[in-house]
Image (cartoon, rainbow, N blue to C red):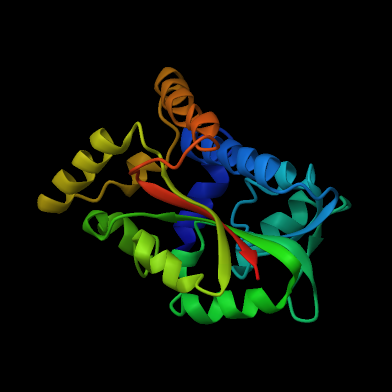
Length: 237
């Protein structure tokens, strides 16, 4: 991502409805699907660190973030705490690797998943969230340095060496209004990233958070039929 995007994430993630609701949804999946206690976790591509404290409730968290300035921010924020910020992940083993909106930033996603598979413990898990639907690929994706938005079929190909525990769309309730806005912005070539990545006024932020986070219960009962993003949980064979 561009440097200004990292800065915007750092500034906004603690309040922004999308980051905070996504965190709760990820937490609900881990709590429901992974029974092992005190697991070793790799937060791969931690970014601003929105998920780190939540992940630490499930076990020991290692933080991997390749962006230098963001890594410096994380080192300062978590200095003296129990988290490990690592420079590489070779010769390490984990029970759970989390890639929260990371895979779309990686040119060779297949190769990266193969590497991560090697550092998973037996029956370990990879949890991902990714943006969905190629038709919604917009100027925002380009600024965020996304290589792609995913279809379910593409995700299944990337994780064809894993057992699929969960693969579902999410951000379901807001799909229609937000996808309509994205398509209109594409048609008129309007750059809207500054607006959508800043926290809106409190009441709007609260409403959007409430709508999105309500999916944390539904998503554990059944797979949602469509949504702005996808969530996958895959287990090493």
